[in-house]
Length: 316
Image (cartoon, rainbow, N blue to C red; front, side, top):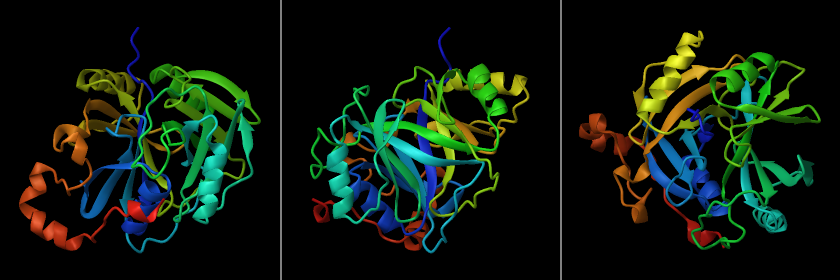
């Protein structure tokens, strides 16, 4: 049977200063800004999308930046670390690059046979870089990071939960995931078990909830092919007692939302239509794009949003 869920689509976090956010993710990490739009539910706040050249599913990290927001805290019921794939021989390059920009990172670790480092952005968002030879995706670079060292897309994500059984049941019985293995109290799941679909569960014995604000993840979105497969997974979830929202139009994908038993907000997003629906690929992320229903308020919205710009030439 063809799976309805095929991996991670995007991960959305909360940030503070939007310009610092742009500088970190495009300048230091070298991701492409693929869309500059607004939070559809709060039009006075940006929604910034970063990814590969096209903003392909499984590469897209997005942010709601609230200037002046205080830092949140990691805790139970949260996605605490977002992991990116890098080429297997690129880890020393990234250590040097993070040193250059005074980003503190962990000692090198090994997990399921692969080397990694972890660090936080300026808001405290947890990031990991995992060196792997199992990722054949094409990297994106603005040119200031060598293509053979550049980030390839998501590797996976870590869910920090008080318990795993009900979440495991949701993933494996309703969302086309399978259990891959356990290592040092980390439980791994995947659709194919490849970079871009990995979900790890780590049990939080303290059980202390995190505080959602700048530097924390708002939700994780899983990918499905199209609107038809999305309706099938929506029906499957509802028939099994999961409270799922109606389909919401996010311009670049359609979305449904629900909370997994541990408290993390899940989304199922369609691969279609993608980010080139309202901009040419060569110019993705350059202009402020608004959904049609708020386009008449463009002047007011633009006046409320702080200016953000790419400063790639400051990051060699």
